Image (cartoon, rainbow, N blue to C red; front, side, top):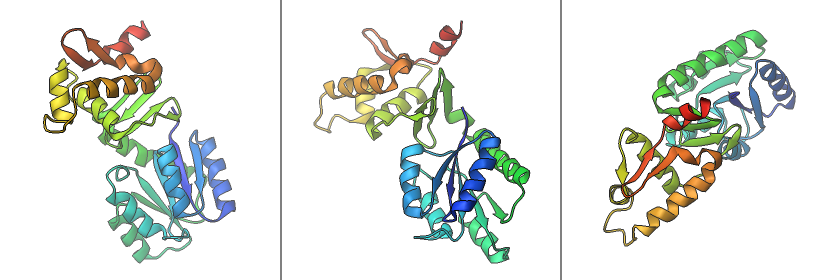
Length: 233
């Protein structure tokens, strides 16, 4: 699965150049020319890394980085800043706000691709324990993103919570009651039928990968990591 890179820059020529370079580097690119548009792309595409111009319109790159790093759902997306300036104050501000690297325009193609790969390797190494990939399905529990191949699987917070709870307890079978008490609670006013409704919706959205949520008759559910092994035989 190719990594998705969101390019945020108001210069259309730079965006086109970056897209060409990154596609040659076997990345998928997403383009945005303002921070407002970039937020929409983040929600729709869940990029793996952001190339961010310091002077991008609307909020500006530094403020946009601050917002990204302040939100739970986006704080783990790595950011590499781009700028035509080479001033120390820019570098210090960018890195203090959570930026991962800083590249000054004009840049060399090979260096840009190499730096992106280094940052992605660093993030993937940290995220490895919370990243599940099997049969075209990718679940990133840190970023709360689920994909099937290159398409985002849009789960509600409750549906994702179910998936995350089962994964965290994947070495044992969880009873209906235990799941319901943990995610809803007896004082919620909901019945256990609510759990079954959400579980059905989750499985439908997972489609061909629905078997990772396995029903244990008369007991409950568990996250089935072994489903990949059986399919690969």
